[in-house]
Amino acid sequence: MAKSNALSRLVQGLRREPHDLKPSIELFADLDPDRVAADLGLKERGRERGAAGEPPTDSATLDEVESRIVERVDAELKASHGVLMDQLQVYGERLAGLDLEGRFAAIRHAAPAAVSEFRAEAATGRDELHGLRRTLRDLETEKDAFKRRHRLERSPRPPSAGAQALKFGLLAFLLLIETVVNGAFLARGSATGLLGGTTEALAFAMLNVMASFLIGRLAVPELVHRNLFRKLVGLVGLAAWFAFAVGLNLALAHYREVAATLQADAGRLVMERLTAAPADLADVKSWLFFGIGFFFSVVALLDGFATVDPYPGFGDIERRLTTARDTYIRRKQELIDTLLEVRDDNIETMEDAHRDLAVRRGEYDAILDQRARLIRLFEAHEAHLETTANTLLALYRAANREARATPPPARFAERVTLRRLPVSADLAGPARTDLRQAIVDTQGLLEREVAAVHAAFDDAVSGYHQIDDLIGEEPHGARTA
Image (cartoon, rainbow, N blue to C red):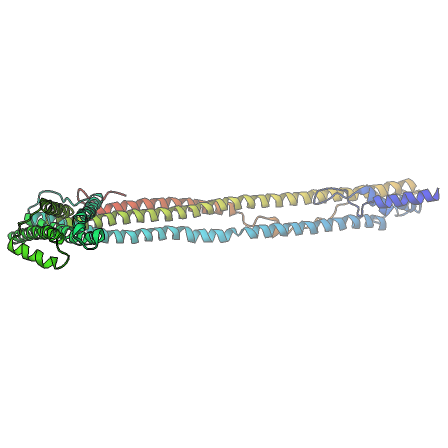
């Protein structure tokens, strides 16, 4: 039996909790009065002291057992108060970590600065557009003066980029075709055969086509100029082209006939034949050869004339005006796109700050709520400990009364009131009572600054478009961006 009792006591000891608190997930666990009563042996001590007549009937203060009960409960109260202070300190650090004041200061400085920087960016772009628009206006004025000076009623007709590419493509095609045709005719009289004939043909084709193209581009337009001297220059250029084209293609036709019979000194003989009898071509194919070359020369002349405006200088003014207009329109659109990016970046940043404040406000409120709940839990725990102390005292006093032969002290009927431990005001109270309002005010500032950025963007774009009205806009002027 003794062995069984020893094992029973060992098992009971292993199952016993290492403290006098009831198992709980609460921060302040309840004190177990039964366990404290057993540890202190309150019933046994109450009967012993009651049988001995202790405490005396006239006792006015707590005896040693009652003092031990109060001290035990008070120790638990102090431990719980320490936990409370530690937790309040943690909440205080979390509040400080929100750095709301720092966020307020940063937003109050950054938000208006963003609007100012946006306006500065818009002003810089407006100055740049002023310069580009003045250049465009000057070119428009120059064009109008050119039309008045030369009595032109029509608009310029410079070929488009596609038409220009087509005309230069035609020039390359002429070179290729004349080289092939001439090479076929000259190959039979060349000592090197097809390769030699093609090489000679390419040289003649380059001279024939390129010279005709340049005269058509530079000299022929002078024929329509209002100035008589320039008309004369154009006429002389056209006559020079005709003489050149006829002479070159006749020389080529003679060269074909001479090269068919001689292997050397063909160039000198061609010059003699041109001087003595330029039209004396014995073979009809030589005349065909001449006609093909002269036709290519005429086509190259007309192709060169078609690459410019018919009136000299008019197309050049229009090209410069078109380039300036395109530059102005493109730059205005680029500046608007840049402002749009800056606006969106600023708004996104301020909206992020707005959302961040909302998150911090939610966390701030949650911390205050958790802190207030913690204090309420501690106050409830204080009431529980006071009740536990009186419960333990009641156990001791009841056992004492039963064993007494003398009346118990009158104070046995009184409840004990535990001393309440203070909670630091700076830890228990809010960080600042007006913080929620400060958050609302700062969010309102962000909303106003977002509206200001939108307004500044609208003003900037409107200002860019107004430059056309301030400086002057032709009917064909820059399209709005």
